[in-house]
Length: 369
Image (cartoon, rainbow, N blue to C red; front, side, top):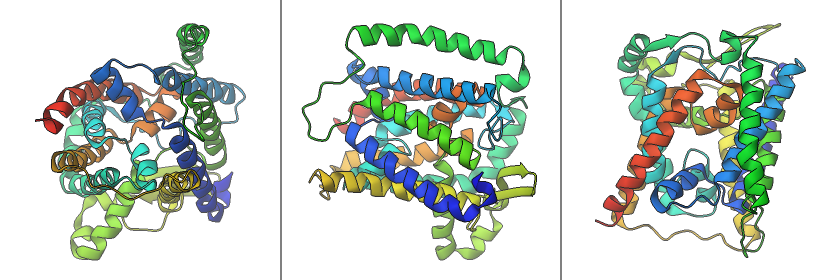
């Protein structure tokens, strides 16, 4: 496992980010866009790909779990202290990603292609990380009062029934997937040069997700990278203030290995989160940029209209506030938590859907007012 060779984490996650950025740009696969289109336009074009992504990942994770090859179960990116704040965090995240025009991942590949609206959303996400650091002590108190269970996953709470429930869900979701396939709705008609079908992209993402889980010890997660970058930026501006913030001092990802305990934080330090999540973030930007350049589509701008730009920045702020409230983002929970039947992921996803619906109601009122 790469934890025994931490110097390999940086290039591994950078390469993974490059691949993800390239694939997402070529398919224009965006969870924020999928949910926005469902609630705003009643368009379900890419919904089958999203369902396939979760189901394919669940199948791979369950097979790996049955073969006893998962290095950590649950992974260190899934919080065992399940709180109702995950629901509230998902709600804020859902509203924010619709206003921002992207989530913590799709914003990156769009930014790489030169989209300045995504640049404003990215800046808002950094601002959201900084803002959360200020209110973290209050949130920590609320989290303790809203605790539901210390079991991270159904497998932990019910070892005998967890796999049965997982395979039952896989069987149930296979029915609409088969129906969509027979109706020709799995593939998306697109005349664009270089376009990659979303169904192929999500299968590749599911495989990459499992590979990273096996190699590094956790599935895809990226919101911590925003907190890291925000911490280093704030360190440049107000080093004394950063040292006083409890959020930047506490342990955020703790891994128990045979060689000892590995702990990292969201503060301005070089640790596991810095050498894994940050290169993943940078790689997605560069992957989107490389794809756009190869297709001769890269261009900076234009700047969005004022209302849209403000909405993008505010949405980005809400996205990271929601991620920190919930302890993770949509990639962490939808691609990592749901396939492992994480209680926190279920709460986050429920809030995410409600938030995307609210965001779809707000968006035209803000942009077209």
